[in-house]
Image (tube, rainbow, N blue to C red):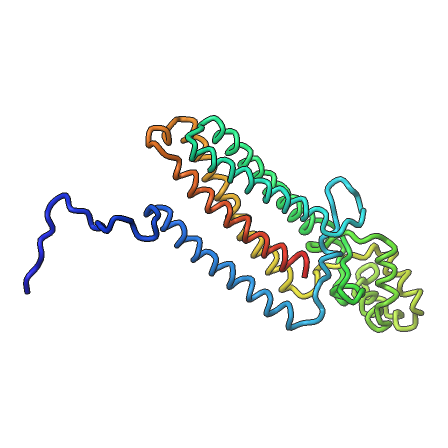
Amino acid sequence: MSTTAIPAGTKWWNGGRSPFNSSYGKVMMWYFLMSDAFTFGAFLISYGTIRFSVNDWADPNHVFNSFPFAGHANLPLAFVSLMTFILIFSSVTMVLAVHEGHKMNRKAVEKYMIMTIIGGLAFLGCQAWEWTHLLTGEHVTLMHDGTLATLATTVKSNPWGVAVPHDQVLAALQKTPHDQLINIVNSLGHGGAAHHDAAAMSHDQLISTIQAADLHVNTVGRPAFGSYFFGITGFHGFHVFSGVIINIVMYIKTRLGHFDQRGHYEMIEKAGLYWHFVDLVWVFVFLCFYLI
C-alpha cells in the first residue's frame, strides 16, 4: 500500500475558503451550544410531558406573585418580568461589546462588558432571592382550580410556596370540599393530638380552625413541579454564572490589551454567542414555568 507524503508547510485546507467560512473556535462554540440546546430541550420536553399529563398543577399566577419589599402584595409575574428584562438588556450590551470589538475600540468594549457582567450578577441576585423566598417563606399556595394545594399535608414551616392574600386563602378554603377540610384539621392536631371531633364541625367551623392554626402548605401541586422548577432554573442559573465568569475573564483580557495584540476581538464574539444562548434558553424557561 502506497502512501502520499504531504510536503512540509502545506495547509490541510487549501480551497480558498475555510469550511463554514468561520474560524475553528467559533465552529466549536456552535457545536457546544447545539449539544447544550439538546440537553435543555430534553429537560423541557420531560417537564411538558409531566405538566400536561396531570390536572392538579400549581397556578403560576399564585406561585410567582411576590416582589421584594412589597410585603404580601399580589403581583403576578412582576418579579420574573424584571428578571427577564435584566437578562435581555445584558444581551443588548453584549451585542454592543462585540460591535465595538469589530471596530477595535477597547474602551467601549470594556464599558459594555462591565454592563453585561453587572446584568448577569443582577439576574443571579434576583434568582437567589426568588429561590430563598420559595424555599424558606411561609405561604399558602393555590391550585389552578382555586383550591388549596396538598390538602392533607399541613405544616408550620413551609419549604415551598408563595404568599397569598388573606381573602384569596379564605376563598380557596370555601371552595375546598368538606371532607378535605376535615383531613386538614385532623392533620393539624392540637397539642400533638388530632381533632377527633372535626367530622362534627360545620364548614365554617373547619375554616375557622384552619385559619386559627396559621395554615401553611408544604408543597405546590405535585412534587414534580418543585423538582423540575429548581432543577431546570438551577441548571440555567449555573449557565448564567459560568457566563459571568467567562465575561469577567474576557474583560480582564481586554483591559490587559491581549486582543489588541492579537489584532482581533474574536474571543469577545465567542463569549457573546454563549451569552446569547443563555438568554434564549431563558425565554423557553420563562414560557414553560411562568406563563403556562
